[in-house]
Image (tube, rainbow, N blue to C red):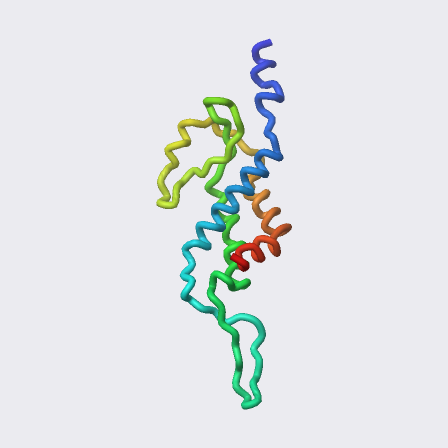
Length: 149
């Protein structure tokens, strides 16, 4: 009876909506961290290349923080960071959380001792899959929001 209770669905099941919410928050934080490191003084060519009446190319330059191409490039890189994330359960209250295993200096996250890691099935991380799913589905909205910032 104890074994049945220990492995009951309530103990081992994962709340997919909660993981999706945590992944979305982490995604925005990771995107913001990369975005904040961009130099606003660096300009990039954007749009079409027009020819003026004298036959010269006319290009429009914008800050890389406003460049749709640069923001899309960041969007493509963010989900790779989710290889460093794991699903876990807080030891204190049993709540589901998402933990970054390594900090930005590639050192072990000290909060790892506060959680019990939840093993994942398969080769690909569920949070990385959710990240890629969100990035594909909401790419226009994400790029548009940061472009307008």
